[in-house]
Image 1 (cartoon, helix red, strand yellow):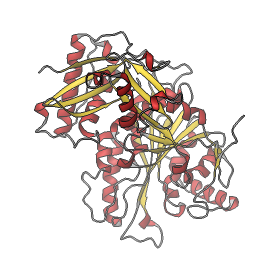
Image 2: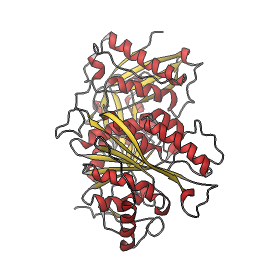
Image 3: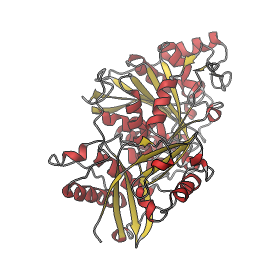
Image 4: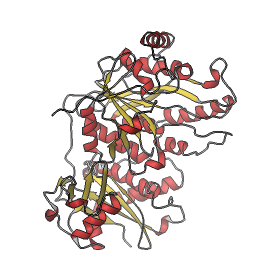
Length: 491
């Protein structure tokens, strides 16, 4: 039996924008008519637009909508509010409604793209409940419906806006999209509640970071680095979508960001200038690289490093050096970029990896990716940073600790479903359990501490996935197995 179509009803029609179709259409056309879009030298592949009530921010957002109208896409991925540390372990939250209702008519949801995205990145979940009252996607839909009536949307709320999460989401989206033409809309306001004059200064610094495509700087900015104006709750309210847009531009040459419009709520007639919200719109543009799925109808997917593989000693040494340099640069607040040696092509093969940090024999951080979305060197680069600064079990690594930290890198083979628990070989296989929106993973190294298979799986379900200890016995639970090639720094 086919499921009944589900439609998400408007939550802020009549408050953020008119509920009357006639009034709404007139407002949309007025904002578009009064907007100006500068000439852009390359195709627009992402935009940033504010999401407040139309009276405050729609005129700032309008140039981004005009830029969107010029773009060639089938689905627009609209990334709204992010949930910060309360959503640790979750990269993004989708909605699987079939459509979003608007006063101008329904906008279809690309549920197939959403399902493929979930398959590509296990930390993407579906929860219609958190989308039901959210305005950060809804306010853009009347403009999408007007300018791109045939386009579908993928509504996304973000988890914690970290560089690793933004890059992981962008790579998974690239894999999920395949040959489908997609565009990204980052829905965000800027600073909240300083004075109008302070807001201009704060927002100028934030937009400069975005224009530099500085993902690490953006996430640090949202966390409060350099934000010293009174009464400022946040310098940017929804950094996840902007971070994904920046990470997405790694697929493009000549990647550039053009600021389109900027203002704050104090600029509205009668607005309170002592306590404002900042707004800006921007266009991201560039030329697709040859390997980008947005450029051709055939998508190149390099084979990940396989189950039966090794890396050369030179490659291992290079990756360990890369990881340590990444941490050193971050701790010294230095801008550092890495280019893999041409004589080590294995570093360019797509592979998932974990980076583990230990200090005096004790775990000090461990973060990894379970799906191959990036070259091996990039996976190690990102996971080294995440293990040091984004593992919720530990405080951020300090410069004083770094000399005592030992780095281990684990490169994962592609995962495959196990027919049953009996197929899992202790000491050989890493295991991921997955049921519903929950998942957890143990690397093969964990067998050293938990050699009994039943106990291994029970602890994995309970401690890592938040499932009942015997969930691995349930047919509704998926067991995925993989192998690992691991290497570490010398003592």
